[in-house]
Image (cartoon, rainbow, N blue to C red; front, side, top):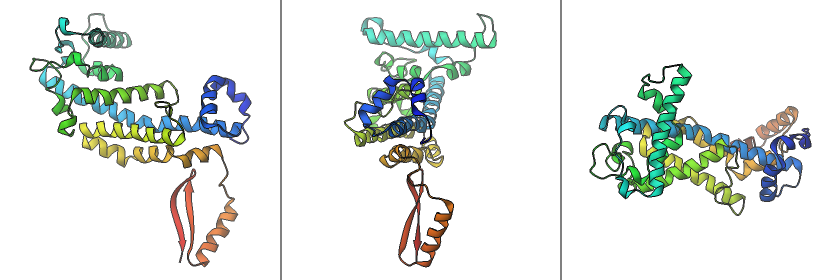
Length: 295
């Protein structure tokens, strides 16, 4: 980072995008500015595995339970509120469902060079549908109590078996999923994900990022304890915690600040081994990962 010509990089990132980092982080140099920019990219990348697990877990849980309750092609037969009871927004949500299914079928037929009338398996359709399709299903338009082929509220418990009783509510789950969707869209469209709700400063930005992590983990937990165990044991949560920190941001703003030649590190290690009550930290990318103690 120190030896990079930042002026040559700036046109490819765009001055407008960098100005967002400039105004929020107030970097003292171009090196600090690009460190802040790289931090934003690394934060977004750290969330990708968690978002992918959430999306796959959510869609498969919905598909499995809806298939058992309604049938294989449940998305073609799902019950919605009567037209006379629909708001304009709910009408759009139903239209979005129908268009998403139609587009998925057409795209699969085109990709596989199938005839326009060829049957497409439900599994291929499910895999083709975007995340927005799944969050859209939690619209009130699909909440039809005691109706056959309705998704909600009857399927809330089997899809979210680990949700507390008070949270097993379509509107509550919809609100959390929309928060995740908005965050995901920022990440996938290369927008600053740390700028959630216009934070007042870096501590608030980090707190909101960690709050978002908590919401994602909460939804995963409500659906599947095994999926939650996966993301924890795979290190996805630890990676987010490490990168979404002021220490890691400072590390990227000041590259090489804590680097030491190997010869110097060897001398310091010998010194530690000879002395009593001497402690030094072991860091990785500016974050402490261990400690050496002389006894």
